[in-house]
Image 1 (cartoon, rainbow, N blue to C red):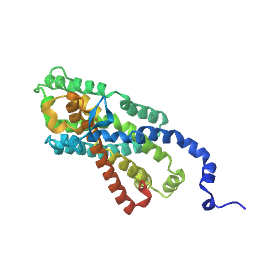
Image 2 (cartoon, rainbow, N blue to C red):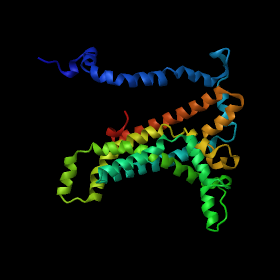
Image 3 (tube, rainbow, N blue to C red):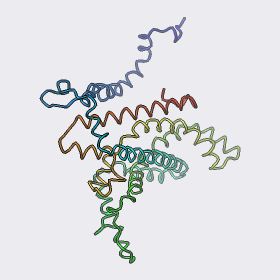
Image 4 (cartoon, rainbow, N blue to C red):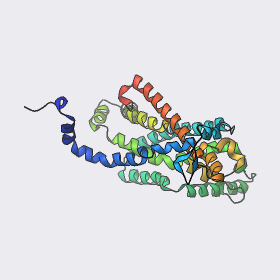
Length: 310
């Protein structure tokens, strides 16, 4: 008589699931090596780091490193910019990714679908440095493409690098252009996993394309959307340093709307290479991100337990 699964010992379960465990082993090793082993390094945020004495031999100074942001007078502005940009990136990014995935699914020509996917996917692999150069060549006051068109039409030249108010729109457009194609792949894969018989049955019952999307595809994507949003919210206080630094650069006139925590810390720490301050800021971001994820996951668990992370 076979043993029930509930009666199996821990080691028997390990032996029975050995294939799945071996498949998970690379991911376990990766997270252990890069996420758990460095955890003792958090201590550097509470010391005045000395290269000769090392992390645990350096002088303990408590929360003094955190005063770096608190006393700068810019903590509120930096956190506001970082959070608001990330909220827009998350909301618009996921909306466009779902929209593009549905469009790809509705395309009848397989050749055109593959070509479209490839073209939309390519911007993700472009270096942020090249993206910054591209934006500069488009918006440059003297020789930029946009100003070339404006002057040829008889309009005055535009000075975007002197107007802080226009950059939230520019940065959001650049981010969506670069990330939407990549983000849509996950949703497109989720759509491909929908049982085709359900869609065929809906067509037999007279459902049109919009009804199919509304009543079958979107509800099927609900779990994927919620999980990806939960993961994204964990980094809502961490800005996209590569995008902001390479596109905006070090232009004080644009700081009110483009300065985020990462760019400010980079400029500040590059003066004296104070790694303790940088670690303190990283810990501050991680703690806030952890609290947000736990809070949102708790709310999701109360509403839809099946869609929560744990």
